Image (cartoon, rainbow, N blue to C red; front, side, top):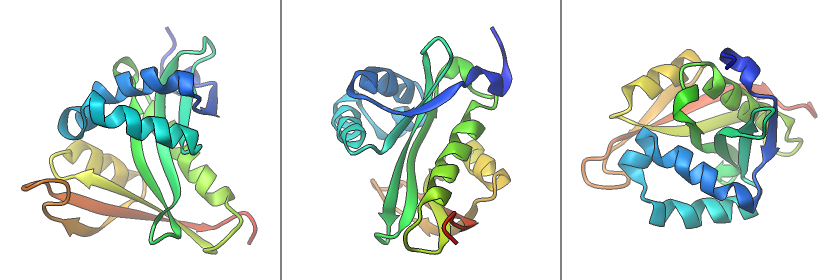
Length: 169
């Protein structure tokens, strides 16, 4: 089996048939363990897939090895919000997540409409220190701490990255 970024050969919008793979990948992650159950994530991802908000990362064999959900006007009805990034367990630590993040940021930059300066927002749980450090290494800055956001005792960090001007500029 190859290692590193060479494993991803394509990014495509998820289709309804991809829902099961995406749910399985998410449920086998800290996000799935801490925030979701199958009963809550399946309808959420199903709706997101229908709205063309979910992109899957696939190997040449067609195996889905990760995905992300991008809501292009998810923050202040203007800025992009990366809601989820999840990588299949056996591909973590091999650059797949970075390629997924880069693809999401590329999509944000390709938007030709308002605003002129593109920004990417995401939330990281205080308990997920590793993810916070990862996003900081990739240019994200913590701009706010949100206590008790989803439940009592759940602290989330709102992070943002200035991506610059979009392609139409």
